[in-house]
Length: 159
Image (cartoon, rainbow, N blue to C red; front, side):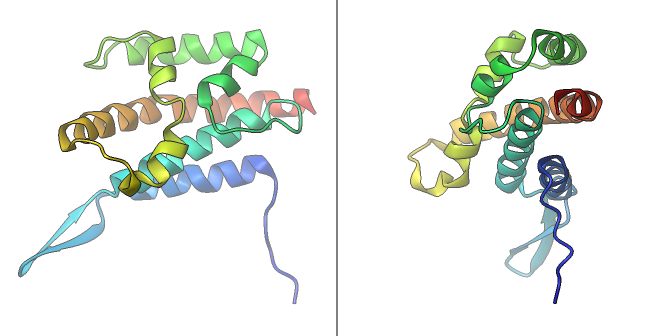
C-alpha cells in the first residue's frame, strides 16, 4: 500500500502551522468537576508554532542547516529576506505590551521549541509561564503569516 505522505519541508511547515492554529481555537475540552470548559492548548500551540517557524526558515536556507534556534536560523537568511520580514512584523510587534525590539522578541523565542516541548521537566514559576505564554503566542500570531508568505515567495528562487 502506498501512502500519501508529504515530505516537502514547506508542506510540513504548513502542517505544523495548521496544528498551531487548531491549538488556538479554544476547543480543547477541560473537565473541572462537573463542568466542561473549552480552552486553547497553549503549550502545544507554542511548540507547533516554534517548529513551523523553524521549518519555514530552513526551507529558504541552503540544505543541511541543523538546529532549532530561531534567531540563529533567521540570522542565516539572505539580507533582503530578513529585511522584508523585519519590516513587515516590527510595526505589529511594537504594539505588544512588552515594548521590545524585533531582535529582543526573536531572542525570546529563540529556543522555544526545545525548551517547551518538555516543559514539564523545567522548574519554572507559574507567573513566569503565564507571561511567556502570552508573549510567545502573540509573537507567533504576528510572525507566522509573514514568514509563511516570505517562504512561498522566496523558496523557488533559493532552489
